Amino acid sequence: MGQLDNKVALVTGGTNGIGAAAVRGLVAEGARVVFTGGNAEAADRICADTGALFVRHRVQDAEGWQEVSDTIRSRMGRLDIAFANAGINDGDSDIESVELDAWKRIVDVNLTGSMLTCKHAIALMKDNPEGSGGSIILNSSMNGILALAGDVTYSTTKGALRLLAKSVAVHCAHKKLNIRCNSIHPGVIETPLIQGAIAGAPDPDAARAMLENVAAVGRLGRCEEVVALLVYLASDNAQFVTGAELVIDGGATAGLPGV
Ligand code: NAP
Image (cartoon, rainbow, N blue to C red; front, side, top):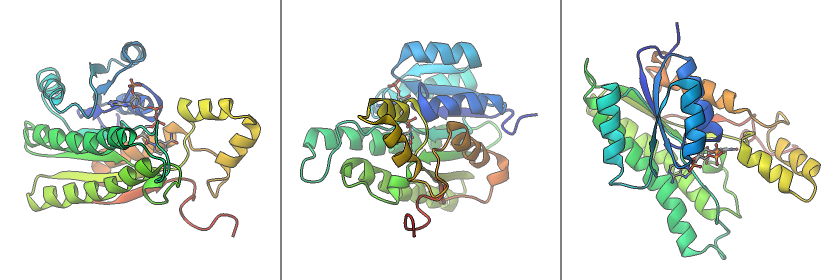
């Protein structure tokens, strides 16, 4: 018996990193999963391994959401879990140097994309056969709590997701929709992105040590650890958890470093 038997989940940005681990982890707990992204080759591998269903879609593409919703309705007949995971920071910079185009692109994906995920997830969850219900989880970051000087757009969008989750949560509660919404705040997680950044640094060992020491516990987080929190929030064990922000960062935001 899985913790998510008979549930259907949507994962945005499920082709790589935390999103790909989420697809695998949700399937392992018994959910049927639809995921989105751009990399069809990576998606094919995940579909072959898990039986999940891929829809090629950019999360900020408002018109394209119709196809995502139609696919979930016609192929799955319901939606119980939505993980708004797609996120980027490439091209970001500090407030003095950030280019308007980069700002708009990152806001579009990280913030507008998550808003559209909530909107469409709620519409589907309201129509569930036995009545309205579901769980929405927004993948923010510890940088939604502690800002990065060199990533002003990423920090701003990830901070905004905290209040997007809370606004959605209280709206759904007031409307008695039985739909919960929470944000999660991972620290530095060892995804291919982070592995690439370490490998590409002038001194990879020093880069790894620096990133490990961001967390009070002195190590990087694992995708599977984030997925375990996701599974809990998606499950019926979290029925009373809504509008919450859950850090999963090895203590990175708990205190001043080294003091
Ligand atoms: P990643 O390895 O770069 O994966 C990003 C995923 O998002 C890919 O599957 C990518 O799909 C997809 N994606 C990118 N732009 C998209 C768009 N416009 N529409 C739909 N999908 C899109 O990143 P990650 O490290 O796993 O990060 C995933 C999320 O976790 C992000 O929101 C990130 O901010 C958050 N996070 C990560 C960390 C960390 O340490 N890694 C820490 C805190 C929070 P394609 O490549 O197929 O386009």
